[in-house]
Length: 98
Image 1 (cartoon, one colour):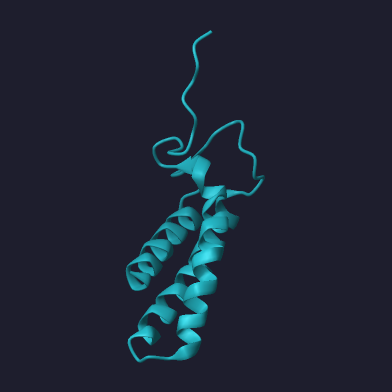
Image 2 (image 1 turned 135 degrees about the horizontal axis):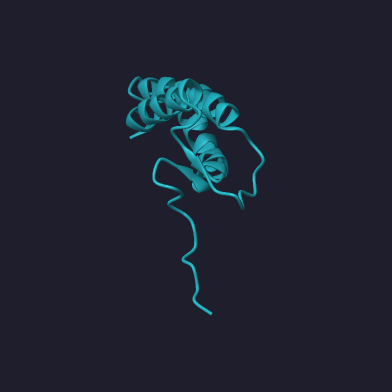
């Protein structure tokens, strides 16, 4: 799972770096990160997740430790990307009618 997640993070990081207009950022975006910054964070963490996932197959204790730490960091790092997506924000709250 970590290997697949690492690959996905690497792909989304490269896309965010290469094409800043691919991801849609809403106007009420809480985190003031550019999509390029968001892309670099995802690219670097994707490589770390991918390597730790491969080393889990060897039984490395440090890879298990990195896996647990990255599981916690993953949720925090995913929050800025919650309102940026190619579909306009998958975590956006529905509009209420008045």
